[in-house]
Image 1 (tube, protein in one colour):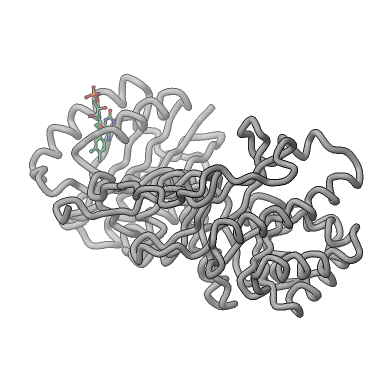
Image 2 (image 1 turned 180 degrees about the vertical axis):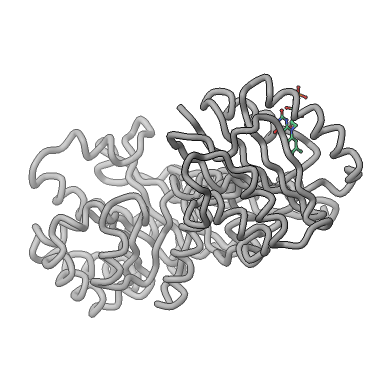
Length: 406
Ligand SMILES: Cc1cc2nc3c(=O)[nH]c(=O)nc-3n(C[C@H](O)[C@H](O)[C@H](O)COP(=O)(O)O)c2cc1C
């Protein structure tokens, strides 16, 4: 299989530009031996490289390049496959943009083309070259500092009330995971999550139920969530609960039930956010939209959970606009290294900005993911980097502290 990978990266400040000559000479030999072509552009600070050749060899070389300490902020822009090579002259070729006019560089790159079909700007790879040479990508290119710029220091758990005892705790228990604004050091909301007594997340518990029972338990577990919030003295906080969309459809008085329980536990509807997962929503969109209207009329906010994980996504946004969306963890995994993920997340942010929908990102595990998303304009986060779900109340939160200021 013929594979093409394109990435961009940043030359480390302490590496002299002169050192590139030796690196290119060595890379030329290695690439030739492995039947790989590397076209490298350099503009004085950034690299842009196309690697093309047999799949295994391209991936091996790319993996070594990614570990190279002479550059950082490496972002993969394209990984594609094709029938024929664009650049047949195996080896390594460096184009220093400071020494040539823009059009010259593009022409020089095109002249290296050996595809039986003339290389044209319709080719995605060539378009990436053009964008880099004309530096029109700058607005989307965030320079994030190294991961160890920040320390994540958990605060003490202040919750001294001991384990929460739900009346039916033998069947399931609840955990709280905060959604935070890390730079403001502020808890934005607490999400109540169902866990099995063995500590497995809700899916495992719901799998053990059948038919309509699922919807009943789904709804009544929210009563336990509100009781827990009352018990933990979290009255002033925003509380996020998860509901299966069909629970609202199958249980006719579900909204009234929620409102009664909210009141009984001394909460107000305005502090409650109901989260729905988009792939479940798609099955009954009309009934669901009606039920959402009832929730909103009562003052409860609505969020789409795991946005980007299912099929409904954009169609759902066109049909009804939630107050919040939470971007799926899979989409933001290693977002700092992936051009496609960055483009998708930026599009979601842009769309939500136009619609005044608050965006938060889920499943943050790495400091770089968080830093990239902050640069892109997100300020609400949930994930193990900051706090894991905690079975007994509000967990310790690892707020980021800039090293050197500690
Ligand atoms: C911007 C940049 C581009 C590189 N391109 C290549 C390349 O095309 N082929 C290659 O073998 N090494 C390339 N290298 C060097 C590799 O990162 C690495 O040093 C080399 O594969 C030797 O790996 P080793 O030191 O682990 O043996 C590049 C390095 C940088 C910083």
